[in-house]
Image (cartoon, rainbow, N blue to C red; front, side, top):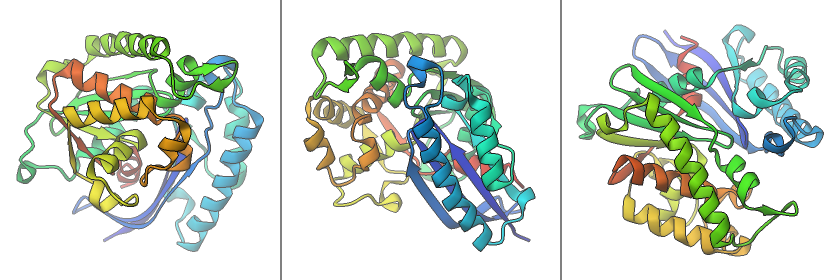
Length: 316
């Protein structure tokens, strides 16, 4: 018997909704709605420690849209779960965010820990993977978000996990801005500083997660799926084509170089590029590249299923 559920993932860069029919016995989700809005909730949080009023309003506007979709599909309140991640964890005024979401959706947003985020990401990404895919375990799942990146090593269950603050928005704001404006393209000095920051965070993650045990690298979230679409040369963003595609280390290296040497207009002209990712995709690509170089991965398996699916499964 299926249960209709709604999962909302509110991250640093985007807020996403999944409405699905969940079959707990079969362990399957049947999508009814899968939506994404770039709201940049984490705008300036790394610098100010606070959620900006305009970022909150963009997020609340998306919540109002999602509330209507949840109502149309008849999802009961007890089957709605709203999870918030890095930006709202870090913000001094996160109570303003919580009150606003509660008023619009009628549910309490859960500001989860990095470990909880890792667990949901792993479940969502690996639930449908198996021996038939020819992918050896353990999997190392990396979820490159806007504010943080989660590393989860596991087989059928999580073995080790760690969240570190090297998301694409955070790295862009920390290293690629000059006088409040994006350097376009970034300078070699900016890229070197960002690389050093990423490498330090990878060393931190490696103390908790044994990278050398991983046999398959699985990459999640918008930076990775966009790179997957670029590697495939798609004329438009196509989740079905991108899901479970494989991108080699050489391709990731070439795409990262291309993105970090391109202007805003050149990045925006890439067919699979969402306008809300144009300014942060270079940093996200560099995070993925350094992860692959650090772990020795020859390829990354791109997954369109991620923390959002994990949140939905948790409603079983």
